[in-house]
Image 1: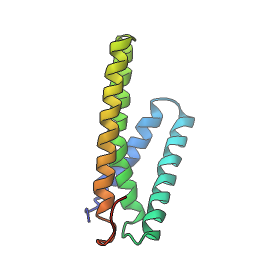
Image 2: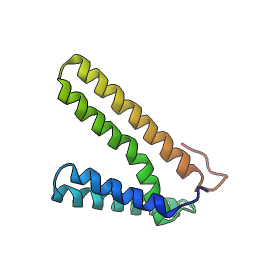
Image 3: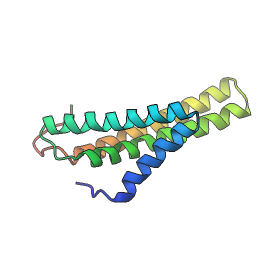
Image 4: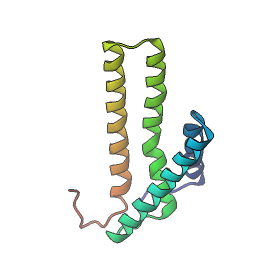
Length: 122
């Protein structure tokens, strides 16, 4: 089980705030609600499957998993500022694919520790 430190909780909150702040105040609220609702869904799903994850641990997992996607957003915006075209599309596709893979790997690694040892991944 990964230890949950208060820093991880505040990093997730800051990430929600900064992602929403990139756009407008209404989007900040939407991002915040989506992250918290996602954390509730992950916690309930894990508890129903016999896992040992808490609400705040799942919130931290979401923070770890959203960070690569947020970095991809920043990189894609910078690439779009330099121009659009086939090369720009290829760079953005590569960055988004890599960040999606990173996010998937991070979530699998964190959530695997919270499940019972006799369970197998599908």
